[in-house]
Image 1 (cartoon, rainbow, N blue to C red):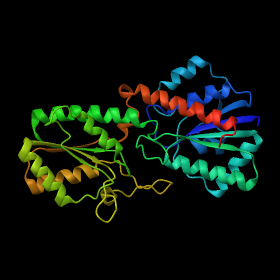
Image 2 (cartoon, one colour; image 1 turned 180 degrees about the vertical axis):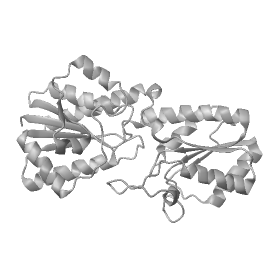
Image 3 (tube, one colour; image 1 turned 180 degrees about the horizontal axis):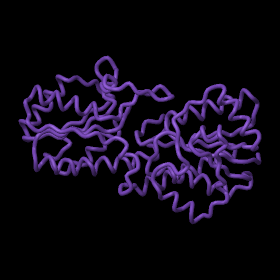
Image 4 (cartoon, rainbow, N blue to C red; image 1 turned 90 degrees about the horizontal axis):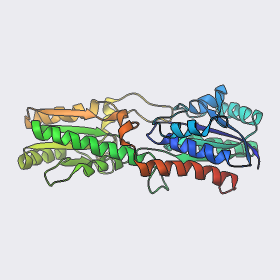
Length: 324
């Protein structure tokens, strides 16, 4: 099938998401089945606004520089398409003869790509729709690991290593809250900071295991007795025995896909307050790594970058080859 291609980025940026973008564009340029290559600015919002740029016209040297730049070069969005959005999107696709659509992102982006693919089927519109995986949380199904995770994991390990050295000098309790709504992979990466038996992080808490305040206090108390200090790495999505995220009690912001905002400083400060009150530790500090984990320039993993490029390239190869 010969036609035009549309590609966009969605959700949280990463250190290597542009590698996937450029991998897809370079593969599309090499294909005789793809004529025009459009990039939509800010995801589906850009499609609705027809805010497109001509990616075929971009020189290879420019694309290669973009590939090495963190964050989302096309801009991003958090928007779930409504039925009205879908109708408007397909008006644009038909007018532009777009037959290949690629959406780079995480869980919510995969959901959006699926909504558009299903709507194409209902309308009888011949569209090859592909989701190109990206998420630093490493929580997409059917993936051994996800582009974006390796670089973010490197940042977490390096940051916690530095934090542990800081704590070794000043003592007390340090709590680091790390991204991960439903998966503890990023928090687990903090363990890579350990080189010696007494190195932090001494305690790690994940969304996959129920969290109780009493157990947390007991763990910190034991660690203080053993080492005279304590470094804690905790996922933002830790849940109580009832399965509800602890941080939800401190957040009211919800995005278009129904996800409550967990990346704030509230969880860390609440846990720190509990330790101050119940253990009477004089020095208790908390940091939320938050969005800094996503695009930190100095921590790009070469393997992660290469795999992200291949993911974009293979998506186009599979699409034009009818492998879907």
